[in-house]
Length: 68
Image (cartoon, rainbow, N blue to C red; front, side):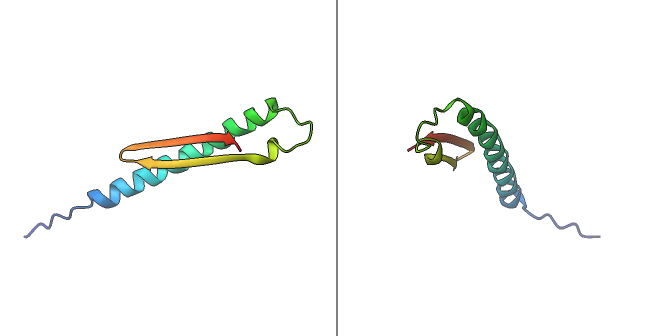
């Protein structure tokens, strides 16, 4: 009986990075909602300029929430 070994490592790494990016996005949404509660809303310009950014750099998933 022959056994076939398949290298699924690239697909596995891709799935793990995708799950990491999804988790980071969920964390950013929660953090952004907390930050928006503390944001002054005199004219609503600042609160409407909020953005989220998720980037995958090698094995690191980096997220950032900011205002323009």
